[in-house]
Structure formats: C-alpha cells, structure tokens
Image 1: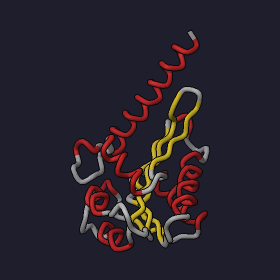
Image 2 (image 1 turned 90 degrees about the vertical axis):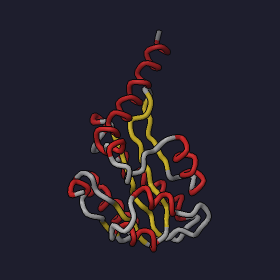
Image 3 (image 1 turned 60 degrees about the vertical axis):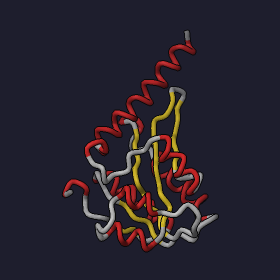
Image 4 (image 1 turned 45 degrees about the vertical axis):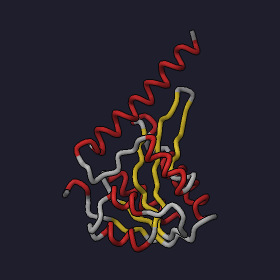
Length: 171
C-alpha cells in the first residue's frame, strides 16, 4: 500500500510540475520559446550533462532547472532580440568552449519555494559547467519577479555579470 501511495504522489508531483510549466511559460502558444521534449533533453545533455537538474523529495520531483551554455555572440543576439529562445538553442553548437550561460527556466512546486532549491541547483550546475567552460556571463529572460531576483542572487554568488532580455510580459 505504501508503494502504491508513493507512486501516486510521484505522478502527482510530476503532473503538477508539468502543469506549472504550461501555466508559466505557455510554450504551446509561442513557437519562439523552447518546448522541452525528449529530443531537446537529449541534445541538452550532449551540450553539457548539467543543463538539466531536478530536486526530488520522497514523492518525486519538486523542482526543475534548465540552463543552456552558449557563446557570448549568441547571448548578445538573443539579448538584442535578433534571435528567439528556440533559435538560441538551435544555434548553440554541441562542441564548443562556452563563455555564456542562459538561465533558461526554473520551476518549483509552491510548497517548496523560498528554500534556496533553485539557487542551489543552478550553483551546482555552474560549478560543474565551469570545469569545462570559461563562463564570463550569465543571462536571463525574466518571466517573474521571483525568477529575476534568484538570477541576480546567483550572479552575485558566482561573481559573474548578469544580462537581462526585456521582460517576457512585454512580448
């Protein structure tokens, strides 16, 4: 009975995160955003194994984080709105020395927010990515004020400049 309850709750956490992603980013209605699926996840892992992170409790995933190592040139094109988020991903080479990191997305179930989970996941990812790549900058396309604040805290923690694209709500 306990195993059945755990499986049910795990699916519930997973379903809630998927629903939260749909509500927050609405990627199905915006072809310019990255719509993460198995193919995208596979390519992300080829770019770097630490592009995707999650935090689990006994009932399954409660937080997901996605970062994309890329080049300063592509970062600047993205920030100037010359390329979309999807194009940023598509144009990022799999084999390169990356000097920029896109803080793409973070999702946390409501009852787990404000515990530093996202910040810790991203800091761990940055630490691992820096072993292979000379990161010089972080960038973000903030969707929420909370996301913007955590991006600022992360940048300060790793002593890297943070660049921001205009708020998504204006697009």
